[in-house]
Image 1 (cartoon, helix red, strand yellow):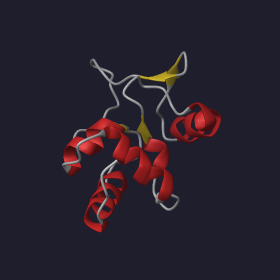
Image 2 (cartoon, rainbow, N blue to C red):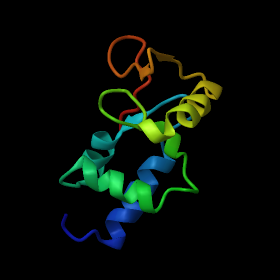
Image 3 (tube, one colour):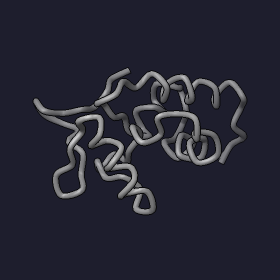
Image 4 (tube, helix red, strand yellow):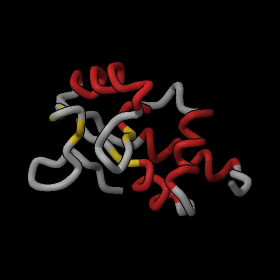
Length: 101
């Protein structure tokens, strides 16, 4: 992975902080909005610097939370009114909860 700059980290943090309650964004959505070359860079930044952010609002493009965070992430989203069907958040269609930057 290419070196990640402080500016990129701050941009990802700003974007994650801007996701409203009751909405989600994918790692790829954030990468695109931040001008990053890969959703994996978003994931790396989130893994290393997101404890003070609404990290639970960031999910995989499949609509599924990370396996190791599944129970906690789905509970936090449910508390905001975001419901999962078969463990997946709806990202497309009329009842999508996907945030657009």
